[in-house]
Amino acid sequence: MDSETHQRRRRGNATHNTVITEKRLKRSEVLAKKKAFEQLIKAAHAEKDHLASFPSYRHFQINGLSVCLKSGYGNKLSSTVKQYIQTLLKLNMEGPYGSEWQEEEKVKRREMVDHEARYIFVHEVANSNADDMTTEDTSTSCLENGGPLVGFVHYRFVLEEEVPVLYVYELQLDSRVQGKGLGKFLIELIELIAQKNCMGAVMLTVQKANLLAMNFYISKLRYIISSTSPSKVNPMIEKSYEILCKTFNDEAKTVFEDSG
Image 1 (cartoon, rainbow, N blue to C red):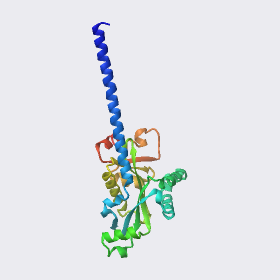
Image 2 (image 1 turned 45 degrees about the vertical axis):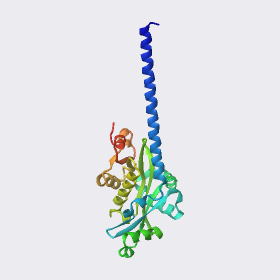
Image 3 (image 1 turned 90 degrees about the vertical axis):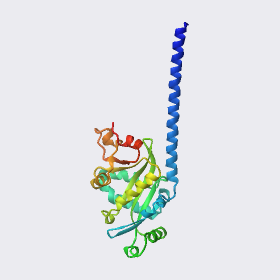
Image 4 (image 1 turned 120 degrees about the vertical axis):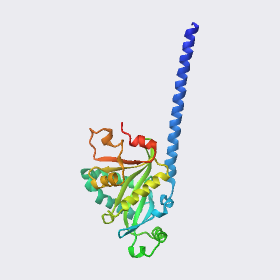
């Protein structure tokens, strides 16, 4: 072998080794990042009461409505609460789901009791009592006694497209407490919880037939249709829902907002 051929091979081997090393480093970085994100999810899920960091959001009083909020877990629901959730879901969602509801209801029944399911329960407080109580008094009363349930949020901390997000599975309110700003109040709280726990975005799924919900999230709360939603991924395949998102950092924006 002449010296020139030997040099070429040495340079080729060196380049090959460099590529291998770079690939290994890149893979190591990806794995380390994924592990860090998984730890974020684990830590967020482990927190006992996400409301504890936002005491001013434990109570909502406006337009003749007074409610207080409590945290809950999917695997610790009482039979009464399970029944309430099932009834409210059917009442609010059977229409938008249409023929899909029978199968979807079974899925939702399983989801609602999962150990990863976290809840914010909305309890009504009698106005006659609330008017003479401070926010602290009302919140304490709610924590100790509670009142009739009038709604709930079911959310989870998950990895979506390798990005940690808070995913809202359900936001359901009794019809008599809708249209008073309570839904917006709850989503504001959810966004605060997401950001405190270093989530890249809040995400949720909305049935296209649920025009009120679509308008609520997109027009009033400035959520957008995610680039991961079926209509963006493949417009030729018609699905009955859209995936909406609001992002909080550049990485999540790149993944969930930037199409193409």
